[in-house]
Image (tube, rainbow, N blue to C red):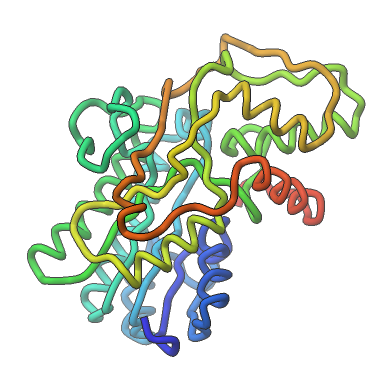
Length: 313
C-alpha cells in the first residue's frame, strides 16, 4: 500500500479496528476513512453501496462485526448470524463493485471444527462439526471468507482473510456477561478488589486451553499481510502458545493484585476444550508476535483503569 492510499477501516471504534488505525498511523498511513455506526449502517445494502460509490477506497480492512462471549452467542444465534452476514456481504460486494485494490477480511478461530487437530492448521476448515455455542457466528464468518475466495477465483480480486486467535487489549468490551473471558475476568477481579470480596466465582472447570493475542500485535500482522500476502487460503494469526483458563485467571488476579480466593462453577459451560492455532504459515511469511501474555494483561488493565468501563456497544 502506498502511504497516500485511501484506506477504509470498517469497525474503527471497536478493539480491532482502533488497533488497526493505530498501526496504520504508526506506519505512516494518514488517508484513513472511518464512519461511525450512526453515520453508516453496514447492514444496509443501499447505505454501503452509496458510501463506496462516493468514497472509492483503495484498500479495506473489514474489522466490523457483532461479537460476544459464550452466553451472548448461545442466547442470540439468529442475531449473530444475520448481522454479521449482512454487514460483511455488503462491504465485500461493494468493494468489488467499486474496484477496491485489496480487502482484508477478519474472521475468527471459532470457524474451525470443535474437535480440530491441535494446533489448528488453515486446512482443517470445514472438515468436521463446529462448536455449538458459537456456530451461528462461525457460519457467518465462514461465509465471508468463502465469498472473498470466490470473488478471487471468479473475478481476479485480491481479497485475503485472516483468522485471529482470542484477542484482548485496549478498547475491549468489559461487559460482565456478554464479553469474552479475559476482559470479563479483568472487570470481575477489579470490582472484587474494590469491594473487598472474599472470593471471585469463575465459570466452568478452568481446564480448557486457550491462546491469547494482544490486539496491537494483531493489527501489526494485518497491515503486514496486506502488504506482503495474496492468496485464497486464510492465514492464522496468533502466538502459538496456550494457557489453561485457570492459569489465565491466576494471571489476571495477580495483575489486578486481588488476594482473595477463586471458586469454579462447574455447572457453567467450558466451551471448546482446546483452541490453539498453527501459526507456522504466518511465521514463514515473516511475522511473529511481540507482546507476551503477562505484559499484555498489565497493559490492558491499565487501559481499563484509565478509561470509562466499556459495556456492550
